[in-house]
Image 1: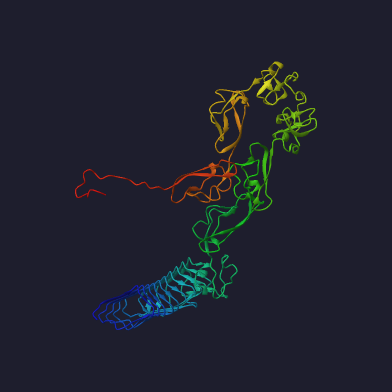
Image 2: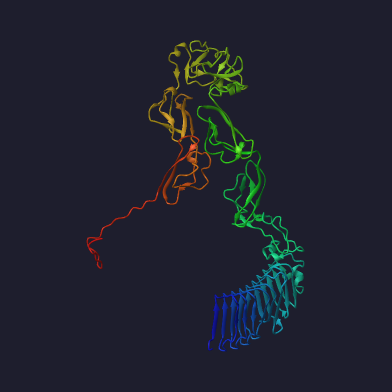
Length: 639
C-alpha cells in the first residue's frame, strides 16, 4: 500500500488484465512488452501518479484508460498495437507527452495535447479512412509535426485547436488527405502519395503553394500497404509476376511484386552488364542490364515466381539451332577441351579437329535445338578421294593424288595411284596446283624416277617427284632431299635441321636419336607424344639448318566419372563435358579429406582419373614425464 513504483513487463495475459485500486503513494507506472489477449483496462489512476509509460504492447481487444490525474506530468505511449480506435484524454497539466510508432486499426483522438506536439511513425491500418483528431487546452498549438507516418487508407486530420506552425513530411499515404481547422503556417514536403483524387495542395487549403515541395507519386505504395487498399474504383498498378499477373485487383486482394536475384551462372544466351540488377533481391521491373549473348537474338525478360527466388530469364533464342557435342566423340574426331562446351550454335563451336590417322577439316551441323552435333569432314587415309574436284583440295587430303590427264582425284601415294594408272600429271603435293586448282607442270612431272629426270629437272627424293629447278633446289617448291644430276641419285643433297630449343606443347624427347646438331628428318628419332596427348609424331625440315616442325600429337579429352570417388567434390562449374586435364577445374577434396586434387586423362573420350585426396588421420603426440617434477606435483609411480 506504500509502493511508489509499479512495473509490469514481458508478460502474456491470455484473458486480458484489469488494474484497479492502485496505492495512493504510487508515482510511476510502467507497462511494457506485454500481450493482453482480451485487452487492458486501467481504472481510476491515483492522484499521486506523475509518470505513465505504456510501450511495445499488444492489446487484443483494445485499451481502456481511466481518468488521468492532474498530477500526471509525463505520459509515453509508443510501439503499441491497437485493434480498434484509441481515445486519449490528457490532463491539462501534462508537460511531456510522446506518441509514436503505434499500429492503430481505427480512429485516433487525443484531447488536451501539449502546445508543442508531434505524431511520429504511426501506422493506421483501418480499411476505411481514419479520422485523427487533436486538441490543445489553451486553444492553439504553437507547433505540430506529423512525420514518418503510414496512412494506407488516407487520413482526415481534425484540428480542434488552431495550429501556428505545421510540419507534415516523410509520410506515406494511399488515398486522400483532408484537414479541418486553422493552420497559420506550414510546410508539406517529402511525402509519398498514391491514388489520391485530391492534390496535396487542396488538402491544406490555408497554406500557399510555396509550402509544398519534394512530394512524389508512388504507384507501388498502395500495393505495399494492406490488401484492403485494392478497390475497383481505384485499381492498382500490378507489376508482372507469375503469382499475380492474371489476378484482378479486388477489395480483398492486392497483388504485390515478389523479389528475386539473378541466377549464377546465367543460362546460355544471356549476358549481364554488371549494373542494374545486382543489389540483392529486387522486383522484376527494377532488373535491367541484361542482353542477348553472341549468336542469340531477341529481347531478354525476367520473371520472379517467388520472393527470395532466382529470376527466370526468357526472350533470347539462338539465331540458329543450338546443340552439344556427342559423347563419346565418333571415331576420327578430337576436341581440344574448350570452345564448344554446353549447347551453342554450330557457327560458335570451335576446338574440333581430325584425330591422328585422319585427314580433312572437322565440321559440324545442328538441326534440332538441344540435340547433338552431326560431325563430318574427317576421313581415313585414301578414303573418299573422289569427293575432291580440284587439284588443290585433292592434294591437301592425306592418301589422295591428282591425275592431270583425267582431272580426277584418286587414292594413291607419290609413286602413283593405288589402283589403275595416270598417263600424265600425277601429283600429291599442292604446290603443283595452280591458283585455279589445275595441275601445272607438264615438263618434268611425267618422269617417274631419279635417273629419268631430263635436263632442267631434278629429283626430289623426299616425295619421289621430278621437278623443274636448279642445282640448289626446285624453282617453285621446297624439297628436303634434292638430286640434280644422275650422280646425285646415289647420294642426294639432304636438308638437315635440329630440334627446337623448347618443344611445343604435347611433345616429349627421350634425349637421344635426333642429334646433337643437325640431322635429316628421316634420321630424327626419340620423339613421342607427351602425357595427356596421343598420336604419332611426325617431323619435317623446311629449311637447311633450321628447326624441325613437329606435328601429329593431339590433346586427350575426358569427362568426370558419373559418380565421383569418395573424398572428392565438384562445384558443378569448370569441368563439364569433355575437356583436357589442364582445363578441368572446380574440384576439391570433400569434407573429411585433405590434399590437392589432380586429374589425368589416359584415353581420349574416357573418364578422368582423380587422385590427391586422402582421409584425415590423427597421430597421437607422445611425451614422457620430466625427470624432476616441478614444485607442487606428485607422481604415484604408475600410469
